[in-house]
Length: 306
Ligand SMILES: Nc1ncnc2c1ncn2[C@@H]1O[C@H](COP(=O)(O)OP(=O)(O)OP(=O)(O)O)[C@@H](O)[C@H]1O
Ligand SMILES: [Mg+2]
Image 1 (cartoon, rainbow, N blue to C red):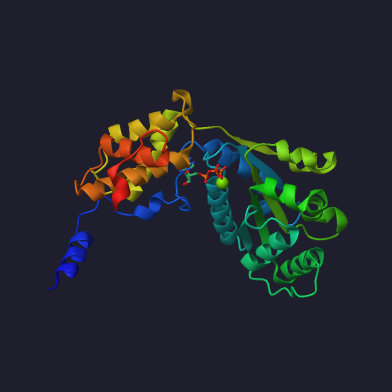
Image 2: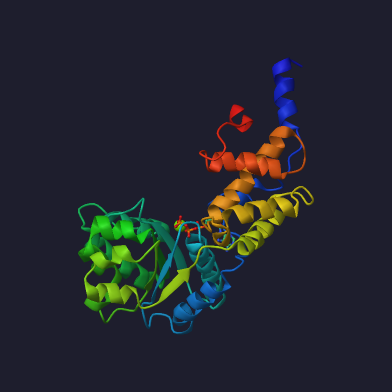
């Protein structure tokens, strides 16, 4: 066996603290969301009618809160469960998640909704408005309902403007006789961007506001702890590691209350532990990881070598 292969194999066979590293990736949607029970209950109240009397009303909710407070993951988890509940009742209710940072024109948002619905809508030569009406007709034919999340909604407001938002969210004002097949979740970090809308549209969107506060250190500890059991082998991450991260990030300890940063720190600390081949994550790995997450705090560290 040549030495290059031996080197590669020695790296591959190195024991890892991770059972399932993906459980720490930002796009992962866990089954439990500690400390977001209230928000999920509020969403259930708001969108109850989609299950109980489908088609009767187009509902909407505005989720607001700072960076990493769980808005996106809560919407996705809620959508996933609502879809499953609807399915159990023979209802084809799809959950559609559009990131308006990526799709920020009316045309892009509408074609993305069509794509996720798998709707064979003819795009060429049609305006965004015409495509949307074709999409609603398709949903009528196929008896499909949709809960559409417009994440990072402020981008759509800023780029597409008031008339586009008005068209999209108040479509049933235009076609009152239609079955109400589309409902919305809007997500933004604050409500300032909504001031650019005309007051009627703004208050339409603000009918139900669900707030997401920054996490305290004890809340972050619970979030990290739930994720630890999904991502790591048992016994590889002691409580003190989670506590250190939670206290660093917790809003009550002067941190940002940001769960994304906390989970990213845990992932990097795990990677540092694997790099050391220690089989266990220590507070020292966390300190090094924090040097990466916040480069201005710890200047250089040996994690950057590999
Ligand atoms: N209560 C929670 N339980 C478990 N994981 C959570 C919770 N809240 C947030 N997370 C995780 O933290 C990360 C950030 O959450 P999310 O992306 O939902 O934040 P956000 O509020 O949408 O932030 P931003 O405004 O930056 O988009 C994700 O990996 C998410 O899975
Ligand atoms: Mg988000």
